[in-house]
Image 1 (cartoon, one colour):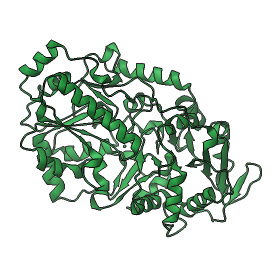
Image 2 (cartoon, rainbow, N blue to C red; image 1 turned 30 degrees about the horizontal axis):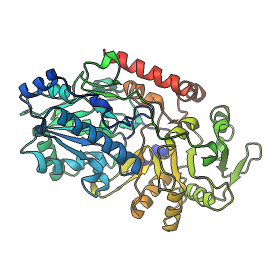
Image 3 (spheres, one colour; image 1 turned 60 degrees about the vertical axis):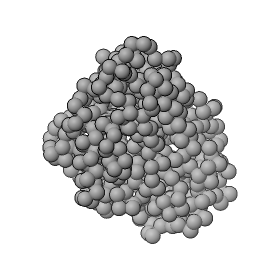
Image 4 (cartoon, rainbow, N blue to C red; image 1 turned 60 degrees about the horizontal axis):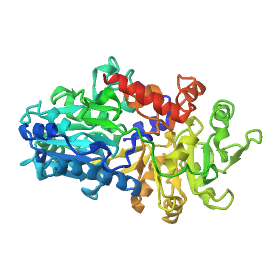
Length: 498
C-alpha cells in the first residue's frame, strides 16, 4: 500500500525511556515497598525457579537523566532480592553492554547474552526504566512455563488497522499479529535466546530500518510461523502500581509525576516550523488554530516570504522530499544571533501536532548544557554499523550545545533534498553524540499506534493530516488538561487489565 507521506515514503523507498512522562518512578525502593512478607519468602524458597536464573536487562540510554533512572530501577531490583534473602540476579543496563550503536535494537545484543548466560540462566527479562517489578510475583509467573522450551512472553498489543510504521504488515487482518508492550516487561527463555543468537550471528538482519522496535522484534522471533508467537501473560501490566486492578500483576507503572523541577520556561524554547508555499493556506492555519499560541518564540521557514503569516525565506529552494538544506539553514540561523538566544531548539514539520506545555515538562528532566538530541528514535542499518536518528515528523529537539557541536563538526547536507533527519543522524553518529529516545513523540497519527500503547501515555506529538481532522486530533490527544489526561489514561488502562 503506498503512502502519501513523502517524509516516510522517501526513507522506505531509499533503503522506541521514558515510555510515559507521568510513569516515572523516582524512588529506588518504591516498587518493593517495605520488606517482603513471610508468605513471599516461602513462595521463593518453594519455587523451582531460582532468582539467579533470571537476567534482567534494563533498556537504558546514555543520557545522564536516563542513566539515573536506570540505576534507580537496578537498585530497586537488587533491594528486593536482598529482602528475600536471595542471592541477587544479574541486572544489566543495555547501553553499557558494548559500544555498538545498534544495541538499543535488542537483536544485536542476543549473541552476547547467549554466550554469557546460556549455562546458568533460564530467562532474560527485558524492562524499561519505569517498569516496576514485583519480584516474588514475577518468579511465580515465570515458574508456570517450562524453562527448557522456547517461550516469548509479554503483554500483547495489536494494530487496529494496517499502518505505515509496521510497513502495512498483516494488511488483511492487522489484529491477528501480537507484539509486546515493552513498558510491561517481556521475557524470552534461554533456549529461544540461544537459537535467536545463532540466527543473528549467522544470518544478516534483513531490515534496513528500525522504526517500531517492539513490533520488529516480535516479527523476528515469530519468523513467519517458524518461531513462537507472543504468549500473553496477564500478570505483565501497564496499569498504575497502586491500583486494586493491578494487585495480581508482576509489573506495573508508577503513578507519580516526574520530579525533575519546574517546567522549562516558554522563553527557553525556540520553535522552527518547516513549510512551503503550497501549504501556507492548508497546513499553517491548523498550527495557528491549535498550538502556535503556546509558543513564545516561533518562526515559519518557507521557500516564499509571506508577510501575512509571516514566513521567512531562507534562500533554500523547496524540494519535494528531504529538506536537508532547509533544516541546516535553520540550525545556522539558530546560532547566528538573528533569533533569540534560547536553550532549546524545536524543529517541526508544518503537519506536526504538538503540545508545547507537555514538552516544557519533559525538558525539565534534561540538562541543556549537555548535547541533548531528543525525539522519536529510528535506526538505519543498525546491524551493519549504521546509525540512529530522530524522525523529523514527530519533532526534533536540540539543546544549544548539541547544535554548536553539530555545526562545528563541519557536517552538512550532500544535497538540499537529502532526508534531513537521517543526515543529522549520520552527523551525530560521526561526532559521537547520542540520540535520546522518547516514545511520547510520534511520527504518525494516533490511528497508527496500538490503542493499549497510547492508553498509558501522555503524548507530546503526532504527525500527518492524512485522512484525519487534525484540529480534532489535537483537541482529543494534545489539548486536554494535563493532570486530567494522566488520571483518565491510567484509570482506563487499569480497567483493561481486570
